Image (cartoon, rainbow, N blue to C red; front, side, top):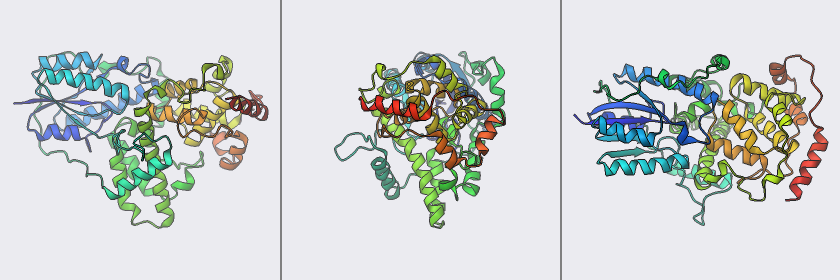
Length: 452
């Protein structure tokens, strides 16, 4: 009987998993594998919060596969070294995989699949983690988009005129498997969790895994999408879908979300239809982020605008620490940073506010903020993180105008008028003196930016 490896990466789900469906349809012996290879992702190996999520997501995948008669085989090390040995030792005939959209990993895959092909191993790849491959859309000049609005206008039109193929269905029956002779084992063997138990608090806020992703989508569509366009603006309200970590780890696909909403949009009134379109645009921003990273891979480490040299930024370790720990003396900023530390997540409006405060009021390099988010966010995604921080700092594509500096006090009055969000995360403790004067730091920031 033929042997097929199914290599799970950012697709930790059974539903809408083209690689798994294809392998099961071949009537072959199937071995699902996961390879933890942080060195191949450096300098953006998964942070502490991401590893917590990954551990529990893999545990659920392990259980769901076991119910279908398959055993998830977990390995650790460089995939480029492990896979050629594994396919040789286990007499594997084919590898089924859903492609990755980050340029560094995509290049790794290209080299690896070429080596496997030379060894006579068929590699079958699928697009499964975006609505469109990151290089699928170009502007009228045949160049990558640098502005979101025309990118999403074109993408949305294509979605309307060229319906996405339905998600493939898992074949029925119990597939054959085998026990590999090579090293590896269960999820616990990856040792993804930090020895320090700080991450235990995340359990009270999140439930990783495919079944929870599907339940969260269903609950959001039933009770959250109607008022999404308005409620998403208020951090004290449960107006966000909170699907972002499930999307990053591939516990749910954007196709599943899009097709779940598509049927509803035609049954909705004008207000709800507008909310659905607003939410779809958030999916579009995720697509745009991957598009930009694909064509500008250097953007994860360097400002796309070359005028933002190292000399532009302020180096102040004490101010950075105060920001990281929610000790700036600016209530809304500190509340956002406390939410991040306690839950591994932060409301999108707060992400913009704390980012603006760090890069503009404090003048600190956006990379310092990106690295902190990377380690503390359960939904840390390289494309989204990079695009978001460069947009906030004004040094990337589709950047916020340099004179756009959010005022946390004005934002609090508008979006947290009863201070419900601030009280939730700061309690009634007295506020410390502000780290900077907002008006003066704004003036200094404008002067720095004008000099560019």
